Each structure stands twice: as C-alpha cells, then as structure tokens.
Length: 315
Image: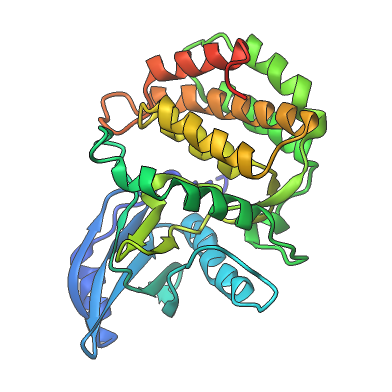
C-alpha cells in the first residue's frame, strides 16, 4: 500500500467540542470556535485577557503553521525594519501530537476590506490606508535576511523554474481549457528578469487589520517566505483587488502609487508583468474552484485583466 499524500489544501474536519475541551484543560475559557476551511480558529480567554487561536487540521498544515513561529523569531530582530505590526504569539503546542496550534494576542482591529462587500463605502477603509499598504509591501520586500523559513528550505530550484512550475501546475489542475498562450508569452518575456525577495505570499485586504484606525497588523503569515519572487505581494494584491474584489480602479490606484514611490526599471516592469501573468493563470483555476462563492474570483474580471495586460494597459 502506498503512502497517503497529505495536502494542505484538503483539511480534515475536526471535532470542535473536543478542541474546546482541550483548551479548557489548558486553563483557557473558549469564547468561540469554528472551522471555515483549513484551520480551526476562535477566541480564548485567560486571566481576563482575550486571545486568538488557530489549530491546523492535518500534518501538512502543521508544517505550514511552523512558519508563523519561525517568522516571529526573525522579525523581532533589531535589523528588521517593517512598517506594520504582527500579532505576538502567546503559546504554541500540539493537539493530538501532530496538529500544531498557536495562541496569539488578540488584535482588536477590522480588515481593510471584505471581498463580499466591495462598494465605495465598504472599501473606504482600504482606500484611506492605501499608501500604508504600499509601504508595507515595500518594507517586506526590502527585508535583508540570510535566514530561511520552512518553505524556503524546501526550495530546490531557481526562481525562474519555480515560476514556470507554478503556472504549469495550475494548468494541469484546470478542467476548463482556457487559452493562456498570450499570458505564456508575457511570462516568457519577463521571466529572465525575475529576482528573489521576501513576500507574505497571501497579501490580501482581509489579512490586513487596522486597530483604532491607526495601527496596521498583517495576519495569516503561514505562507511567508524570505526567498520568493520580487514584487509577488504587489502582484498578488493587484490581482485580488481586480478579479476578486472587482475593483480594477483600486488595483490601478495601488499600482500607480507604488510606481510613484518606488519607480520600476524597464526590466522590473517586464518581471512584474510576468508575475501578473502567472497570477492570472492561477486565477482561472481559482475562478473554476470558487464557482458559486460570492467572494470568489470572477471569470469576467479575469478576462478583463488578461485583455488589459495583453494590450499594455497595466503598467
């Protein structure tokens, strides 16, 4: 019998009552708990303080969650300068020996935006802090560190090979045959100019929390990488704003602000366009998987962004 492959995208369903009993055993009072997808999350109380917790639901997700722990150790170094905050870790351990859990300080903040509500009023928080978002992207990308995080240590290929492997993997997983030849040409034109830089790797508005309208926190850091593709977070945020939030106007505002603060060379523009091309190919797979989900990637926005990228209207 072969070894079962455990995928971080296919979580197990855990018994919430058993998890709540476990945290009660650890002298926490469970305020709430739920499993929306990959993790069981919720809020705890201990000594009149509230905390946020996250429990992995399989061993692959435990490996991803280790990044949160190692990333805290690195970012607390004096030579790391970032224009945002991150929730501090209060306690870690293993539930049922293999399922890693982390208890964080509770951030009393709200997401900068919600993908199911993208009208002008609901996006106003994001718009009012869009310059801060630009600074965060650049400060993360500018981290100078020789350290490696868990996913970095598994990287055994060049960045160019990683990019090609990523979009070919997306294509292999698609059921619908979307024509991406134009995107592959854009990737081929810029892939030679891609370079390495740190990235959050899941940089979306809902992972940015604003507290008291002044303090910005970046959360959900289990995908963080110190050896990723330069401009990846900028491309990821642009793509999500365009195709999931259906706000190309705000996506372009973000990109224009970044370009005005940190001008890109011709080679960097080609590299950035290549990353957008890869994100679009991945987005077609997302749109296929998100079918029927109100906050999912929209195929019509994917097609619109592809057309604008092909015509040179994006950067």
